[in-house]
Length: 308
Image 1: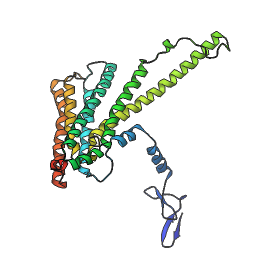
Image 2: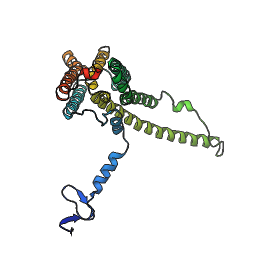
Image 3: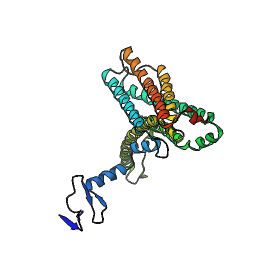
Image 4: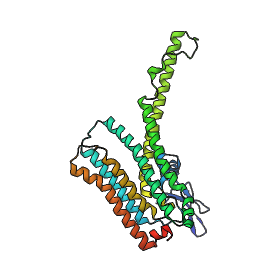
């Protein structure tokens, strides 16, 4: 039912909502439907994806934010993920699934270390090459990049630790041995059985909790890697040109690391070479286009970065 207040209709909160699903209160404020309220509450809950985006994503500020560049970065990342998934599904693995997972965990730790080292070196060279007035300002802006770079190895370390716990590298039911936490209250035999059942239940609950935490840690690490590579690990907070300069350094560093590791799938050499070179070449091409766009549209160039 719609009641008239003056010359405009006001829909009460108990009435049906309009086509947009939004209700308007008598005071003119917008009221959300139950479905919209639940969706907003669910999105506000802490989750690994939102945490990764908050730590490694570009923070809003007075920096230049080009929507076209952001869209191209997302398209590049999406194509890379699709190509990786296609390669894993189209060709058989060279090793078993467990060896593949263990190898990827090891590569994740090493890759995180390489990315962090390359980013620190690249940003450090740019900051030290700038003139003194800009050098101090850039140094004060390093909090965001350091946070983004620290989130990646942190997530990878947690993944490795939880995986080791689930494999039983740190504890085992057999190593605990028989105990009686009732101190003989129900007899030695019944007390040992009760203690064993209780410890077994605790192990099951701990395993479920570790498995859930492992899934969350994997999602966090993958989201941090993807978001961090898209944002240049928040180096744009130091200067708008840094993400375009740092991105090729990161991907070519990872490419050099992969040269010392064998392929994961039994694919033809042409496919493997095209796949391994596709990422660094596409990132380099996109970075050159981004540098040109920043220079022609916003007047941002290398001399402005160095203050020369």
